[in-house]
Length: 221
Image (tube, rainbow, N blue to C red):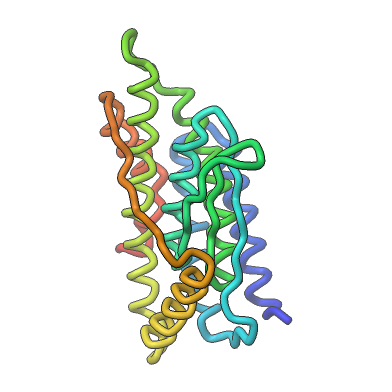
């Protein structure tokens, strides 16, 4: 049975993310995302101390068009930043699929945050004036920039949260990482990593948009 305190923390995270998704005010969104990220990092480190007799689990996330490949990449990198191990498995079930492996608390965090960021990425892209020519290339590069910066910020926040954990946290995280990698290897013994090709001038604007989400700033400070 999960810790009631941890369940309440995650419920607060859900409410903060919903507020961030529902506002067009940049300052309000930054405030809600900063609070949600701080609580999510706390939840993740607290979960490390909880016994997990079942070991790592997994789930398949499917995202549909438009921009299914770019959405799948966001899901992939958010999961990776939150200590999960994602695998891109391609088309199926009406969209692009990502198979995510990890411990229960990290899977839940990755699912919550990826869902929120997909909505924020879509609304942010809709507000950006695209150039008169090369619109598709610009939008795709914008999403790649947004996703890369989100990954960088989340990874920094997770590292900072782990550094402030109790003695032994790093060892537990390393053990869990090894268990997750073993679970992946049993299903996918041969994995090939790929880097997306990019054209268009929107990458830098996407990076700026991700920075405005202020995901990791409380932890980094």
